[in-house]
Image (tube, rainbow, N blue to C red; front, top):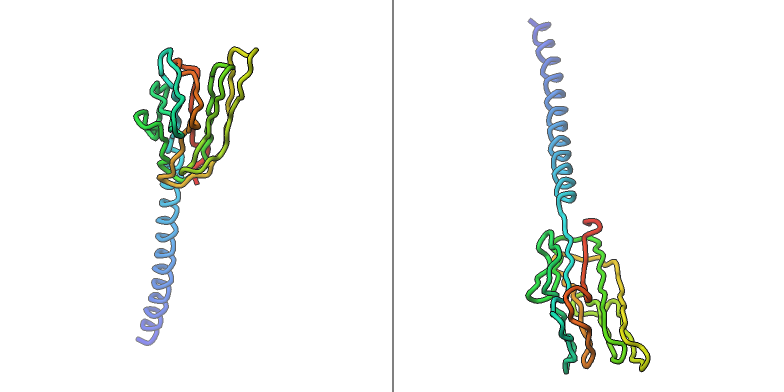
Length: 179
């Protein structure tokens, strides 16, 4: 009888050990499944837009105050983070994004654009008038680390202008990598 009790005790110890290892394995499996889902979510987050001024043949500006440019001609807007009614891009996820802005304007007038993140100027592009210059093109770009709900837009400085022809003045951006 003693032998049987010893064997039962040994089996109980082995069973306890197996149950502990099983619980550890289940925890590791759940953690791995969570990590896989997070990676899938990061890979499936696609954010990319490109938009043009879409102003027909008219100039945009000059205005009495700094003005957010509204790029009405949406070329592409994957992820719907750019709002063509406001001209504002709102980051849907944390990550590193790349933005560009380009303009076309007459060479006899001042022009200047600012790329703005959360109301802070990040980069600028501008040109000063010249009597012998008929047209100017310019642009700038920046990588920005954004958090969800951060905003990015292009601001036209007060008393300056750009040509509003459909595809000459543009604003684009995309998510490089989620964080």
